[in-house]
Length: 340
Image (cartoon, rainbow, N blue to C red; front, side):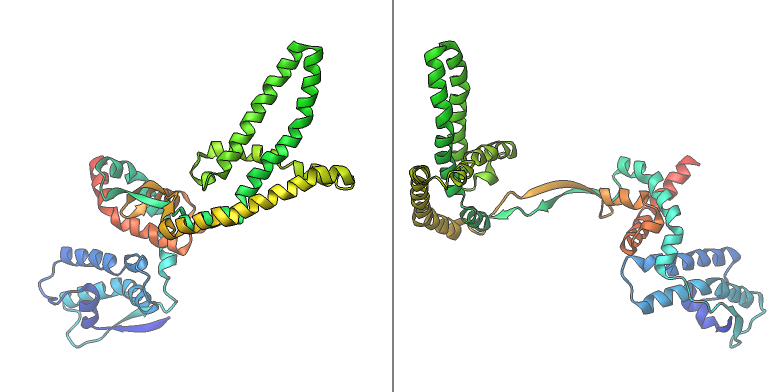
């Protein structure tokens, strides 16, 4: 506990008045309310104040009652100009703005919850704007990714592998057809469907940037089909120890892979390079979303602020809550008058 000496200059500074004469009790009450609002730490909490500002506001806020008492003493004649006025001044560290807001957070949350319906009805300080939630991709990055991922090679080799994978089923069905034509046809139809679907999926995969511009469901459908053809790699690995079989199957595989790789670098790579020069900086797949704001604060964030336990709110959240409280205090007063 220390002694804080106050003067009439402190009264004028904190209550922000120049003329101390002819003030009524009602005037003093209004000055007290004004000062409470003026020097409340919440007033600057959302502006990221300096430590000096925080200390000034906290000290002035704590002195309001003392300077009001001094003003009353002056008006009643118990205090004369030039005299110093002393009151016990609590030297304990003033509450920080964050602590003040956290202590008052339940009241703020309750008020904002109550006025939400009124705000939505009147659209007071409510606006809606389109927000970019994803910047998408640069065309140059997507084209480079296509080349780096060997999409062309993977798809072509999948078709080659599928030919060998489907060879045995076709041979088996031809035998069944010679024995039972109906059963053979029933087996042949689904195999033909598979034989048509697979190359179509591979061709779609080869088309530049198809995995980006095709619908997600289509991409999710074609990828397993492309991977199915690449089971042939396992087949080659299994029979790699069988000389003639490995040579008969593996050599064409290596030759085709080499040819496709050459096509990739001699044809696709230059075309991609030209495309990068022309459209490389353009963006693809930008996603925007309409977001509703209350006094500049996103609606989803407002919901978080008024539903989260104050003890769990971060410093920035508390400042945002205090800011919203100040912005919608007038709505609360009007709502309360209408109700009561």
